[in-house]
Length: 276
Image (tube, rainbow, N blue to C red; front, side, top):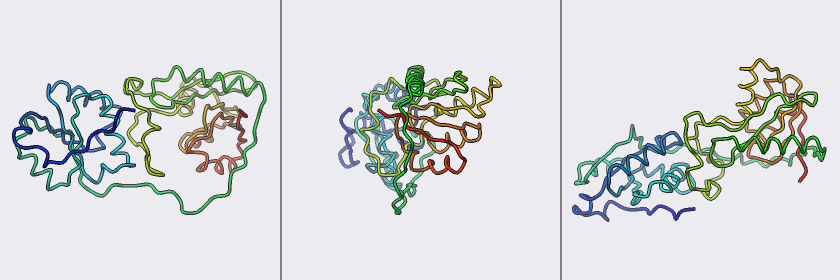
């Protein structure tokens, strides 16, 4: 991954330096896969080195604001540094002699919202394993479907099967025409705090894409088996339950495992993990 973006202070820039830089004031909520390219273009088109000013409460290592800025810096070569500041400092800087001052949408200075893990330790989950050749073939097929995804890091694939017949194939899909593969960063290298999630993606997970596609085509998924490259999140799990899927075979564990495995059990949906 590209070296972490340099953290800077307003005190580093005298009047002469400010006159050669663009100050881009931005809220972490305005940084997403839908805006990355626009922000990159704004920085490039200014023809100037740029300092990104962001609310200090949003820019803490391990939180999504920090992670989003690292992603942006990986594609914006002219980004000089990030300046986490409070509201009063921001107001003062807007009156200073920066060459260009650009405010990207509403910027909120307030407490950051976090998601914390439960303090209770849950009993380990026991999930049946399968080495069935047909199951392996279908998981391999789901992996192949992943290649059609226009999504960025770690897209998923899904194949719905009933009575040995493939009903629907689907992959994680971005609907904002973003070219996520063009972002040269590995999101696994961004050490987010436990429970902190990157709520800025406009894509739909493979399972929900598949359920929607089945509805559009008039294909019933009742009593079908869903073959997934990885365990589904809670939202996708609810979609699969609602669609009438009876069995789920998955290739890899994922963050949803601890959240929704019991939900499948409650709804009498069989879970199987493909053995490696």
